[in-house]
Image (cartoon, rainbow, N blue to C red; front, side):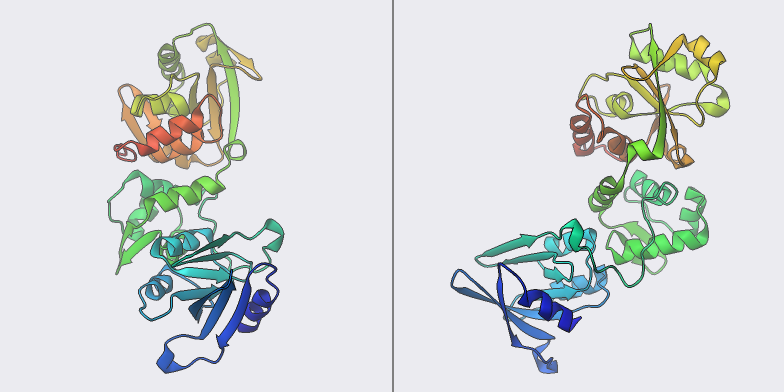
Length: 339
């Protein structure tokens, strides 16, 4: 990694770097000393090479003291860990070109381009936000402040103990989940939700059918839907209708709900609903995984998706969906309606 970092910085087309000290010395407390020259000024950094960065070792580096600011150099830094480094004021560089420097009189930030993503983690991390694995994030975000054991998370999510163990280990390494012996607690809820939002794909994880109805009162449409669907197929409302019940901000343009399966013609007749390709006032979505039905909340006569799910579902849609999502997330009651 040392030689790779040296070569990367030697070919930097914009910034001029110079290694002042290359060989590590125990008494110096750093692996190397690096100097950046920019606009006639020089900035020195104590370098730490970390092969496998985690929240634990980045926190340790952020807390170090010394005359020069620290600079973490790693083969690969996830965006989540990079965000934590920025929060802690720890400078970093990875071999994909991801760079962040902040010290007195200096601020440099560089994101790697898609084509430059050539260095990956030594061990492929589990996918936290696949259709099935996202059950864990959904459970954690639906109960802020709650402590968990792994066995409780297994029971809550229906995931296998092995998968929960791998997901928990990765969340802890990323600094998103705190662990004290066997007790787990969400450490950075906002960062966890942001990471999920960056990976979420509504169109890919749902099959949506739209309907046109003569009824214009959306609450009446929702009540009729609850009445017409069988007990085993009750809707879980989301997007604008659900957000409006939790924290009103915009007028809902449609009623949207998750259902285990799309209704048959008999139910459609009872709803007096006609299938349309666009412009419907009722959207029914069958999720790729049934995890959305595991974390719900009740408002009046309606079952809603958890706030985190409603937030995610609003981000990719029109009709001021992202505005409603932001208003819901900024509300002090966000995430506190789980059961």
